[in-house]
Length: 169
Image (cartoon, rainbow, N blue to C red; front, top):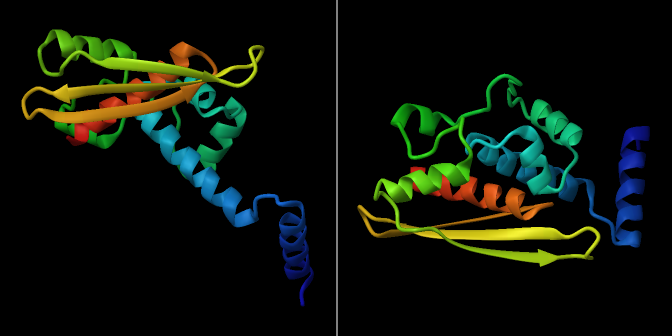
């Protein structure tokens, strides 16, 4: 058995004994976080806002996105191709909640209903926001959920997910 294989086997044994996530679990979680971050960034959030809503350090999120081969430009937010090419309902340069409010005023979507819940200790709460609406043209229900360190960050994350859902509806 090679040294690297022995280390991996030892790490796996230790993780099982201590009930810790395995290396595969950690890779899966990193992939999940980068996928969600990409959605949030395409919805108009900054790296910092996305990191806050995912409860990850900004530096860590940047490193994970770089490892995944996702280009991040500090001058302009990342915008998903579907939003750019189809003239989608989302805007990569404006706040997602503002975009939802504009869509409501334009009569494209029903008024958004929001719920925000708080968990954790009072000195370090975590917020989860849910947003729901209907696309008026097709009466298609669309929902989004996001979390963050503040109510505003959670609402922004939920709005970004909702906008992505509107683009695909």
